[in-house]
Length: 124
Image (cartoon, rainbow, N blue to C red):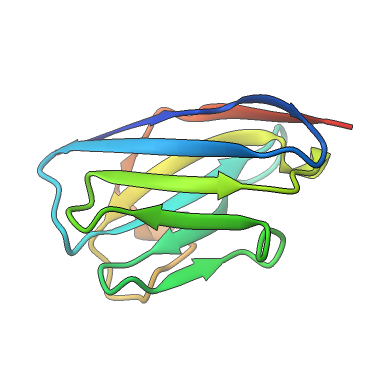
């Protein structure tokens, strides 16, 4: 079992920045892929950014150039630095982890372990 706990969400005005953190505990493995997802009201959960055990990253087109994913090699911590935030970035953000044969996937179906979610609200 793996436990994931997100922190760092909150409210910010458009153009501002926030940094999300995810602390992983339990049976974590350095070979895990970890990722950030988000879900806005009435919408499906979507992949934001992912990081595999080789350091390969993948970003959703909507956040590329504005968000940066990073983490430690032991896969006990994951971060998402969000800059130039827009109102459409408003959502509950989730941390996820699992082994994957796919390179840094952004599909929620590829991940077994999830955090409880953390609200990010961007006002115009």
